[in-house]
View (cartoon, helix red, strand yellow):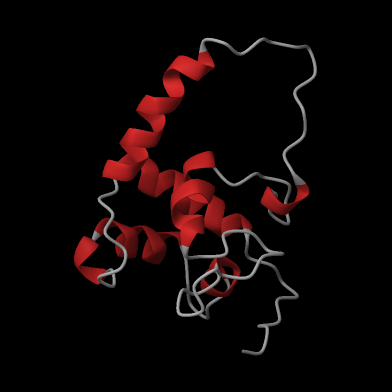
Length: 124
């Protein structure tokens, strides 16, 4: 979470420079889940350093599971995902994150959008 706070704090001054337009640009296709929801920016920036956080990506770290694979794991529910993310003792050592409840909810909601009825795990 320390990384998330630093990224957010660094981006606040840039937000003041943003202009508004009537039409928001669509998120890049690679950041959009099957149901059309976009990956939160901090998910892409932080989690995406190791994990593939979108359906059409490959994890930069071969040992880090693709979020689509996680989301489509047998028996995974939003509740089990929230429980996992809420207990930092579950994380491998490489995942030095300290998520607040709001981030956990956002991440779980996004990951659940990656579930599909026709999911087939990629070999590898």
